[in-house]
Length: 303
Image (tube, rainbow, N blue to C red; front, side, top):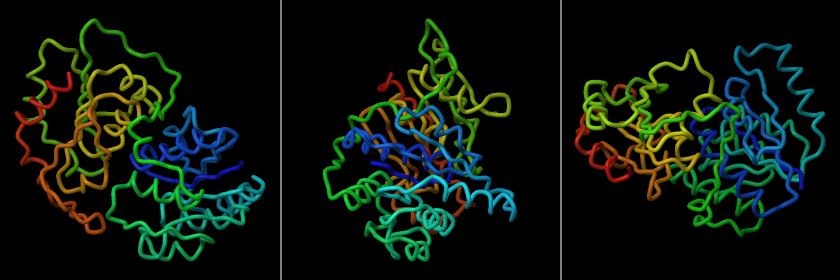
């Protein structure tokens, strides 16, 4: 079975989307999965054991000549049994429309992030946009393949990410503190995070505050070497979930009920409940209201 998954961006969204590839591979042993991604985020998918082929598109800056070349390349991929748009944006839907298949599956008008995207699909899944993102993927898979995908399988998922770098060695427990995020209001204040780090003086603390000198492959290796990852609602923190590494994800003005998938070892601490995913306020720094002691207590439990 030849399947294309369209998930162009961004790091965190791609990471959670990879669970769909893993579940498909578990259910259909002969499945060949081609992943269509924005070239800026290609390294997130690279080396995943559940992706057979990656097609990276140069979408920024968007120029006519590369765009025409991309469309030509997409058409030359051949015919797919199923194409899944896990993103639900106009740009991902247009990419989906270019791919050759009689079954192009995406979210319905009221379920997609951008409703107009639904006009490009042959099959449209109803799954509320505010619903947890992983549960939405389960809905889409069941809709596309006639059932058989269970939420329980997500709790038993294998490692979703792959890498070629070396793991770090330490005779202490490794704790990664991620201070990177796409938006400033997703970052837990450093003065408070410093208090969290200070509670674990006997452990090996790794502070990630710049990714300029390392690529995602190296970051994957570091995270896979850790006993705990702590950070805000951002892709690098979510990598811990994908690698089955214990983690604490700190949420402020983004919807923790939707944007993460909690497990026994992947804990969510949120400043507020019921945030509307379609109306995010980037001037809301409520993440700072979370007391360091709360994070410390959870961290000690996970360790």
